[in-house]
Image 1 (cartoon, one colour):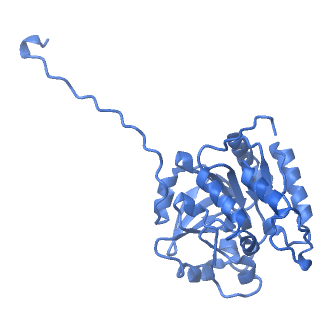
Image 2 (tube, rainbow, N blue to C red):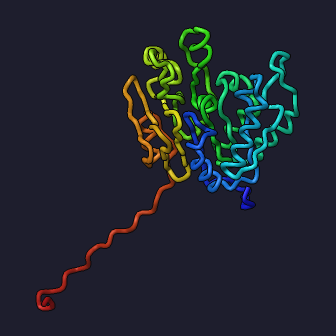
Image 3 (spheres, rainbow, N blue to C red):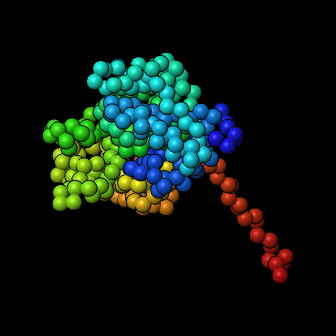
Amino acid sequence: MDGTARSDGPRGPLIVLMGSGETTPTMVGVHRDVVARARPAGAVVLDTPYGFQENAAEISARARDYFARSVGLDVDVPSGLRGDVREWDGACAGDPEAGLAAVRAADWIFAGPGSPTYALACWRGGPVGDALDDHARTGRAALVFASAAACTLGAWAIPVYEIYKAGAAPHWTPGLDVLGRLGLRVAMIPHYDNAEGGTHDTRYCYLGERRLRILERDLPDDAAVLGLDEHTAAVIDAGRDRVRVRGRGVLTVRRAGRARPSRRGRRSRWANCGRSCGASPRPPRARPRRPRRRPGPRPPPCARR
């Protein structure tokens, strides 16, 4: 940290979504700008999405190093936030109460790669999910969620591994609906332009067009898909009614197979994004209108020159 800490958090809800590349040079500028805005006194990284992986400690160490070296931010990785400890996870119990207290007191919270469904199993309906929802409601902390963690913020989430790797039928799983706090009923899909498949379609977070069309039929009429390309960020500044796309790709609102992209560098009103999704985002603060100047009475003809 640079010593310029603040305790009241960013002005209004500030949520940053990243499609991928959250700890690469591509996103350094985004992270620095968010930190400069939030000036966090407490910054935490949630290890929950990847907490089941054998290399969880290594991922946490790399995250600490990235934010310290590239962003100038010292981050803490609280323990005890991986849910119930299972023998096969290799996780230690840690201190759940201290971990939860760190999340509640934080001014900046980051979560990234891993499994959306594992994270949701630990967060949804529990105190961590409630704390994240509270931050989104009050703007107490800036939320920077990428990749798998970004998936969890919508009303519906993709069980990526279950569908793509294990062959489960395409289906949604309930999300945290944090974006619903901003008036958006969406399914958030990162890795939207993924091309790793080469000879087969891995767009839309490895779903491909065929499976995404199947899933879209299960969404309500007033809901949409919010897709974010890889190495791309959407900076949602709800307090100022703005959303800005940064990075290499685009932010896409898709409804019933019809896509509306917002390209990088573009700044839009958050309310307009909500209308594209078919929802009613929280209205921005009304700006006072200047009274129109009414012309006075015309002078009599004898006074004109």
